[in-house]
Image 1 (spheres, rainbow, N blue to C red):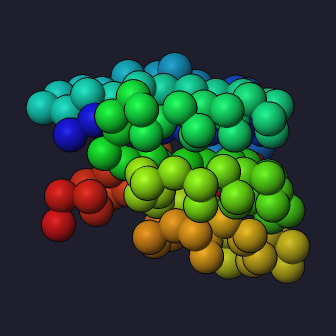
Image 2: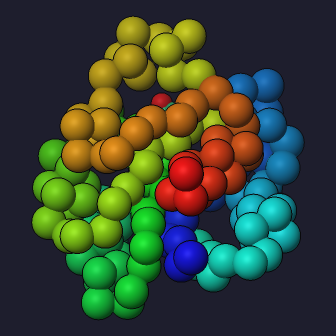
Length: 139
Ligand code: DQA
């Protein structure tokens, strides 16, 4: 299968910021592990701190033939109607993922404006949240 992994705002700081919450591996290291674990699949990775760039990447995903999007939008998850509408605008199914268990943290993290347009949500499994998200497309 062909997967697009999208990471949003501040995920480029993974392995540097709040290691107790997000772990000590960098995003590049996590992406390398994801590729190794999903070696029969095509995996593309995109990270941006800019909301509109993420929307544009999602818009292109259908014509690029992706079977699924695995998206960790970071804090955009909680308020970006633009990313929500971008996901709804393409015929590529998306799974929302998070490194941390957002339900065991601050109240504001419990609300996602993306979940409604995603086929499911996986959180709290660290880097394995991405792998579980991709595997869910094969069930
Ligand atoms: C996060 C959870 C978000 O609440 C937070 O803003 C992030 C990372 C996660 O992967 O656990 O930046 O999406």
